Image 1 (cartoon, rainbow, N blue to C red):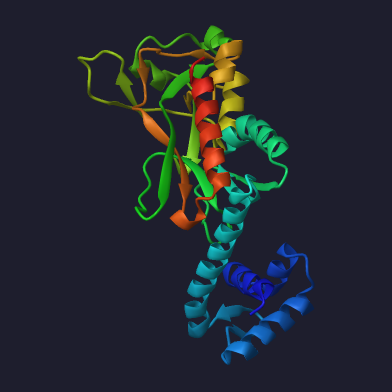
Image 2 (tube, helix red, strand yellow):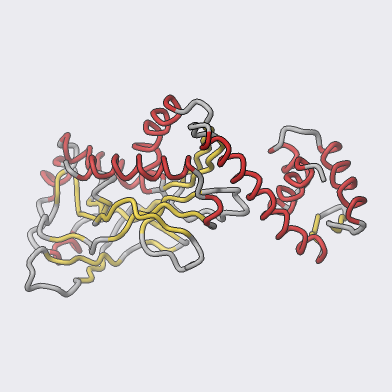
Length: 302
């Protein structure tokens, strides 16, 4: 069977649209339709049920899709393995990353790794919600916290806590909180994940004898589903942010932001590099993992 036809079939199954899949592969919709008909003729079954309004995969198509994904993943892994024997890092990495980390750190680091390895191709998908590995065709995701899906492969890149911070301008105008309960009197900048703003901030004290977490309900006139927007609001003096120390490390170093209640922060959480299967752990993935570990350690040492 033609590998391009199999790739097209997976794309159509994921997107539910022949035209969209054809655009992704830079072919015409007519060529895509002809390829699927050719594949159906080879298999002797209908892979999709077509109507004027929708395209739906058949039961036979669903079963075949599982094997197609495995076959294409094995071919990609084999190609990467050949390159690794030649001492080259090559192939394509499709990476989903948090917006703040992606824009302000990963963009520059991607340039570094691609200059060193010109046979490597990288696609970035930035956003604070975890991508669907199959629907978005993502190979890797960089995400905070433990993942519920135990079948994923997770490499820990760093352990980080979230800290309270604000601009000197905001604090000069509204005053400096001296205890956690003071946060209720301030405008706190909220991040919304999964359609729900995070209005409860959990803080732990640096003091060893104070092990319990404080839950503070905060108020806000601003909320965004993009972590970089929250950081920018904080730098602009719009309120107090509760951000990963990694995301605001450069702002703290430059003085654009300062710590608020420095004796309190979140519990430490892991930042992980996630892959849906071990088969996709190629030399390029391991190179990216090692580079990110070194870069994050350097940032957090500030």
